[in-house]
Image 1 (tube, rainbow, N blue to C red):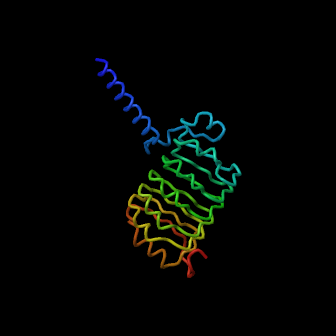
Image 2: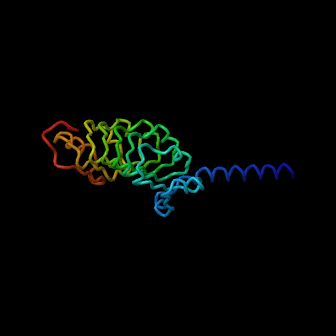
Length: 206
């Protein structure tokens, strides 16, 4: 009888552990119903409850290290700051589904970004990014990729591997006729809206 009770306790404990582990990833259709924290200090008082953190217009020059203590983050917005780099530690937020760092000073997309297997929205508009890495193909859950107003001079064929993409925004990027045509050839435009500005007789990114 004691063995049966011990076995039952172990099974219940294991089940609860599994539930707790998976509870950190919010269902995509529920994410917008979660509370938005706009104060980092307040968020740090209850880190396990923070699924959405919006720290726009805070004059940050780098991403605060304290953010990486919020391991349940599903939605992180840092728009309109002065952030120059996206740190490797971004991979310590494995449940991120939406990352927005528009209107900053970011000049490259680090490899750590491509380890975020749950990422559905990546917005890096109005930065200084010159290369879109081939590793973008690793983000197979990606729905929205916004890289408008960046001096990108390399667009990989790997974009064609993003089969779940619904929104691709390259507005205000200097792009040649040939590059725009190549991208349109690799993207299923019946399900993906692609945004370009008028092409130029120039080299991409210049």
